[in-house]
Image (tube, rainbow, N blue to C red; front, side, top):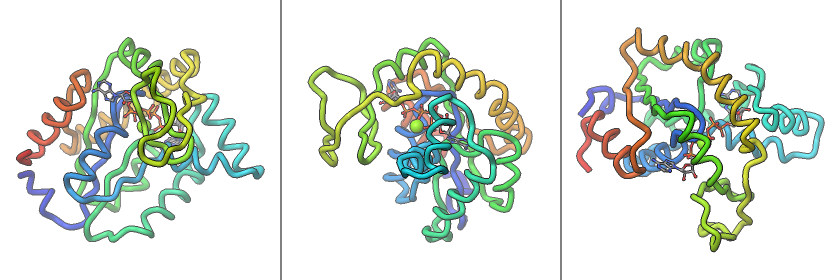
Length: 215
Ligand code: AP5
Ligand code: MG
């Protein structure tokens, strides 16, 4: 087992392009390790539902496929971290996305960063088939028969930012802003590379193997 897993205040970060399975794998690993998951995109989508000037501003930025300003993401992140038993640590999905954000979590010394790689072609294919629960945010692979969420019975929808033109903008931002974050963690020896192109089960197996955890 990776010696970092045994230490306190572990932070496991999932990074990867759009549709690489960050949310899917973070949920699986959270259950396996009994660690809470902080999903930045989901928290921001929840904040965007609030009918206020701030809520509308967040909605516009997300729907345009841009990144929220640093101060807004940090406020939301701090708020979530405050709810957590820090000794146990937590899993972060979709944060940090640029070097400014990475510097903000430098105080967490015990980090493992999991990078899920994926081709642009596969991103477009997966996000074209994704359905998300409008109530609880659970993610599904689209089937015609699938209308309601199996967890909370909420309505399943396509995310507003999952249109091909917006996906391309999000991918460009990933290349421009988030790729340097990968290099940053690589240099610090904190990065684990995973082939995100495999089935959900095989991606999870590779993660567990590289973390030194038995299934
Ligand atoms: P966010 O919601 O995080 O979007 P994202 O990074 O584009 O990633 P996705 O959620 O689209 O993909 P995923 O990797 O989680 O894949 P998933 O598991 O769903 O962020 C949205 C927006 O919020 C941003 O654009 C930005 O505006 C804002 N934001 C978020 N964080 C921010 C930050 N730190 N700073 C500033 N702004 C921020 O899988 C995709 C689909 O494929 C699903 O249907 C799934 O079932 C399926 N699938 C998963 N794995 C596999 C597999 N192995 N094989 C086949 N299908 C699979
Ligand atoms: Mg996600």
